[in-house]
Length: 226
Image 1 (cartoon, rainbow, N blue to C red):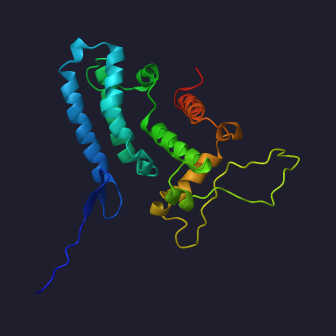
Image 2: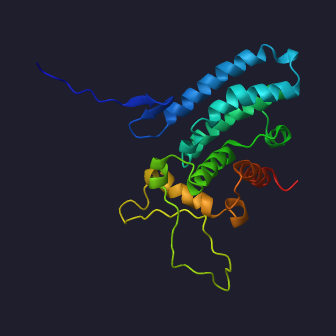
Image 3: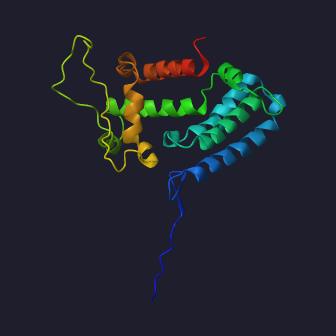
């Protein structure tokens, strides 16, 4: 018998569409399509719902799909992130019964207390890093993104507090240091995002307190201090 090897250009795992180059473009387009169908159905009952109920519905039915495994969207081209943001903007139009495209959705997102897509990705990444530091993440992930453990480090005059809540930075070589795909690996971007958070936030023992304070921080970054 003669066997033929067929090249697989895309596959699905855990609900994610992965292409051969890991561009995630098919995944993003698939999520947008699913969310669009849900919003189309929600618009049919738009007049029967108040704003509070509509916010609850879009968070449970639409935004939850945008957030699913969104840590993998970190480092994607801006055009793909913008596609996801357009879906989030569509949620805002449904919530506030807006007709047509709006020049600025920021006031509506702020009023609904919904973070933009980019900040939602950062939130999920920092939460994942928190679980690694506090030893509640899966073992495989903790091995790939180890906690920084330099036992000979001592406090200095400029830094009197010993930081025990950092992640170890990934090491590059000259061949892959500038690789875009390399930069999208959790072992690379998680330490960058996590270590820049203030120690007072990274050292919180309660995960609920951490999530609340992190969301407040990201909310201020996205919409200002007010």
